[in-house]
Image (cartoon, rainbow over all chains, first blue to last red; front, side, top):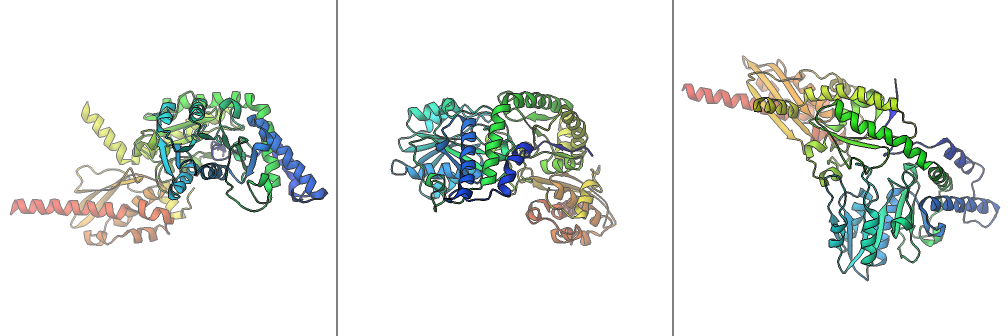
Length: 395
Length: 131
């Protein structure tokens, strides 16, 4: 059976070159980077080299980069660490309504610690209006966090404008660039941000490793106390193989970015056009153009995402959904709801994300396989029969 | 994918009794799209027995399998017997359901009971009219 992986937003596969770079650190090069002998030196040099590679990817200084255990940790660290470091100045934090849960739930924790949180709304495409951020800033605002792009609906946010507002207001600005770093150009100076999160498994690096960049001079309170690894900001023996892999993935992403974007964008555009053309009552979610290169997201009306996913999986296709049933929390995607999409429509959410292994034939296959699945589920759907009866009645 | 039993997968892939009954004797609806699952049951009653049971379901794999199983369990039963079908007995027949699916998706028995109640209240109304 044909196997088509269209879930690169969940994780990209590991590139063979990245795996090769990691291999020595899973065997003979096992030293602890903190140790004062040759074993330690070799490991430390590898970590330093990876730091340079990742810094290069985002136009940062290597010493401003902190390796973490995941994108989620980077976001937790940023939201809690940057807010706590400034609590004598104020206890108000601004986030967007469509942030990842690692940001939103960190903000909830801050609330329990006595902070106040303002959630900035988004428009129907999931885009934040910078003016709304401006209006939400108060005298006691100490942190603003808006993601660079949303992994669920693919839209890219006006980070440069929002960073300008934060700078004017002298408020620290963090962006979650987990969906963008390594995928589209990300330059911390160009964006004008103070802190930025990224994760390895979003651009063909390993899982279990991320990084948080914090501009020099911006204070942050560590989440983990212990030794003086990562400049004392993130204690714990470094995950050397994963860090080396992240470095290699960053180097490859930087070198091949234009070619990758050129490969992914036409696949995305074809699916965004052909799926709604071949199935009735399908809408594209997120911004039609200003979105991540490999990212196509939809809502299929009258049916539920999990059953769609299960049938697609039987046909060898891997995709995601933001429906309540597919979430462990059994709640429809907060992103789609924030965009004003009804619960009913959000249940039919379908997310297809292309990667370097994707081809035009994958698009053909998806466009061929999905319509009969949708049809089958709609024949079973009471919402669809109500719709059909109502539209007949109207004529 | 959620971990579903073979029985659930069988009923999900080959659901029994999907559809609507024209001039059904009773119709019952349970759930709503906010929680993710919604089921409508249609029944035809003859001599106090469920002569036919059909359903339409909007929902996840578990919801579809539950509806199918309920329809199969209920068909041919007397109304009293059908009213004894419970979410627990449905789950058992399906060789179990994942924990997080138990409450949101296991609405088939309730939908069926509503259809029976609908039938009974119509009967009563007719009886009242005749009297």
